Image (cartoon, rainbow, N blue to C red; front, side, top):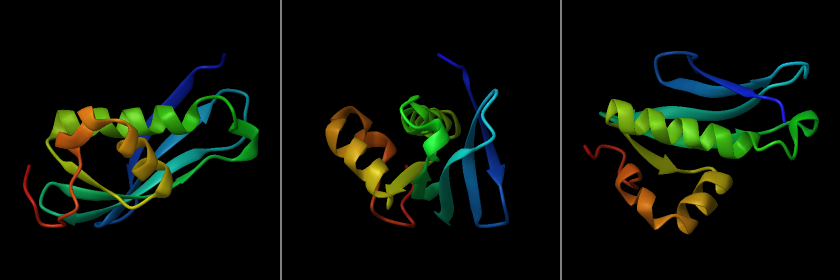
Length: 105
């Protein structure tokens, strides 16, 4: 299985994305996000192109975002259906999620 490389990009003052790449595949997977308040982002959209399908890209992106939230002390509003569905299956993540845009952890 090919190694997935993930980076975080801030696209402007309010928006950014986590980007996944796999060597040899000319495509990118992503989770886009919006800064919603102090220490709060929303996970807006998860996109994985067909060329990267079935390689665990969405899960790797989500895990990277969760690790980033733990390391940097922010919480996530799960707007994206994929992130919301995964959160519903993992009660142990509850301290990393919120529904309140201005809530501090």
